[in-house]
Length: 146
Image (cartoon, rainbow, N blue to C red):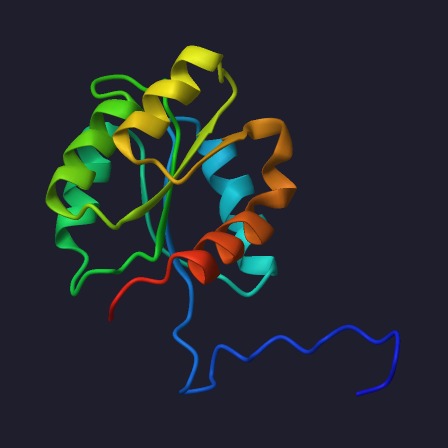
């Protein structure tokens, strides 16, 4: 390896590497599109999208076998179930599921509730370009059994 050169990232086709898979949940179509575009540009596979908490639960329970998706990127303020309510259900079923609460409205109270539920990270929507880095870091620090 040449000094000063970036370390190569493992290919998603490398059989020794389990690819990152993401479920993107947001009621705003433009935010789902943006999150998907940022993640896919970084080589991360978006396996499903949902528009609200109820759809998120349906998608989560239909993706098989767990831990697909590796990470769920979940908006909080949505019609029907909020992201926190959906996350509570998901984590009751699969406590090791990695969830990123991805919201424009992150207060200290919301972040505290998210941490108490077991949500792995809270990310402001203004930091959308950091999603690939964040989901990779989460997957590396808390890998899920396959």
